[in-house]
Length: 114
Image (cartoon, rainbow, N blue to C red; front, top):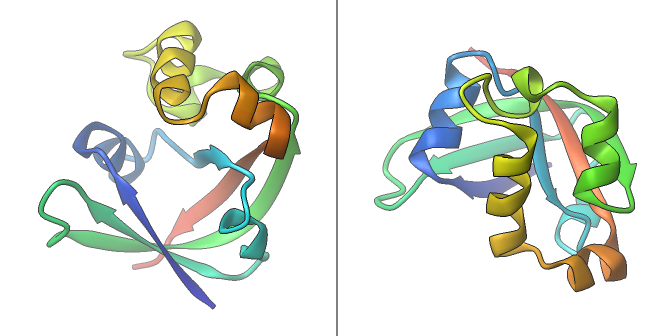
């Protein structure tokens, strides 16, 4: 199955540059459909005209972003140009602590498809 996800340019480029190897999302109804071996088509915001595809090679479920960040270095969650605290602030603009508590969060390990 192929899923589509939008990414801000900064994070889109982190994946293409090979630093960001785990995509982080809320484990909501949409993300609960993602399975190992699926493909994700990542579209670059705002135009959505650029994209790349990646294969799902791992699914990591946690109660919160903070819990997930205890297990992984920023260098694979985004890029060393950011701190974990900065990334959590960005994520919480999209996914509040209440939403994290309600659904949990998902780390999607990906490999780019050439």
